[in-house]
Image (tube, rainbow, N blue to C red):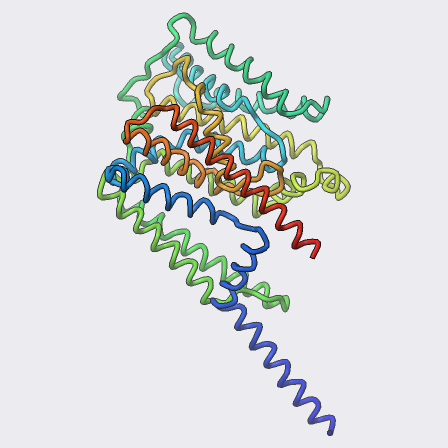
Length: 418
């Protein structure tokens, strides 16, 4: 066999290999990769979508009002405040830490909003700024205690829970409640304001357009570096599925009141945090520290600064969540931030897919998890069942989420050893 024939044979083999690679880059390859990913224990947010689907089916059968457009709009209004608090919880959970004072922080923020804005007459923007600065300072204290004295975050934030609750009761005074002006922009934001339909539809198709743009750009860069990349068909399919789902959701909500500005603001912050976690050096450092803090330190990451930033973001978002809660209830009271706020916020982050063991999670888990929590609460309320059942069911769902996470970790570990 001549050298020329050998070269021709080798070229044909490379062409067939390239063809197989390109085939794997298509829809079939993407589905196969997803199947392998699930088998390896990396379930992602699949359990959340399945849970939401089952919850919707069960409650809609028991009470058709559950899926009524206006009921879903009210559900989104209620989800925004707890979702914001849960968004901060995602940050500390990514590091394998915890913040038990988020409910008290939101309660104190609610009380400060009433005292500074209504009683002291301070302008609303300055009041919100003071609330956010307070949240940052509280997170700074937690981070300092964790970094300087190696105090477990469980203990530090438990002490903070009691301290912040005492401060909330103190500044509210003997009246214990402050009503916010019902006609004020803040209260209208929390109870009435709805996005224009055109803006809602435009925002619904924006994620799909960003997927296409980002997918094409990433694919070009990877091919230029001789790396495999997803085919255009995969990118277009993802964008189409997501766009259709979001447009239908907006269409259905527009049959009622529409999409609340309050939920839109929460979603915007989810997008911002998701970008920070996935596209910045700080975000990569968060996952590295959560995965193995000592290895991250040895690689040059400032572990103490990362911890400090996580606690500060968590407390700040809890404070902003308290402002949202005050806007939703049109009042600041001693009950704000108490009850099941801590449970719901932490449970939402875990149910949404953020690991309690650190190193795994997403900003989107706060959004999806809080929808699960609020759907359960809303559905049981429509059925006129007692709050005791809501606590038990939410606890059961949280336990299932942790079990799934533990099994997924074990499966990934076994595949890694294999």
